[in-house]
Image (cartoon, rainbow, N blue to C red; front, side):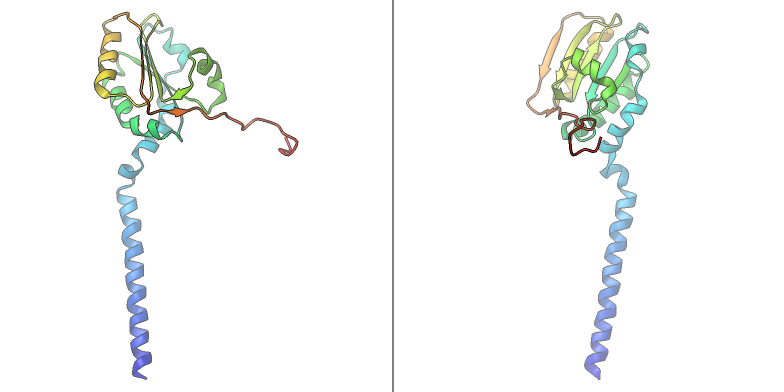
Length: 181
């Protein structure tokens, strides 16, 4: 009889501990969600924050054009840095963000020979390409290039870092005998 009573108490205590741990994990995820998922959230919001590329190339302002994808780990790593640049420079520079998975940007992907992401192209006020950054970049190098487009320095540079993601072929609209499309 005492043994069954002890088992019942242990079972109740174990249930209480498990429920407490689950509650702590859920509350922690809720409280720290912005910290834990900030990069992913920023990438998803880039498209919404973007200036239309047609407007950007005709409004007589320099342009920061980034090609990215939400699945790209390097893009996620750079998202806070890019967001900080946008916050700092958006009054003087257009910020255009094009998701390589969106087929409507295919002509820009082809025009600017995007084969690794993130790719950032910097343009002067007249739409002339000044710099191309491919892959993960040092903040100081990017800031220097951004400042140079504001000062209208005209030397083209291509800066490639080994840390980048190759673009995955988008097969969403392909029709095959088994796709029922």
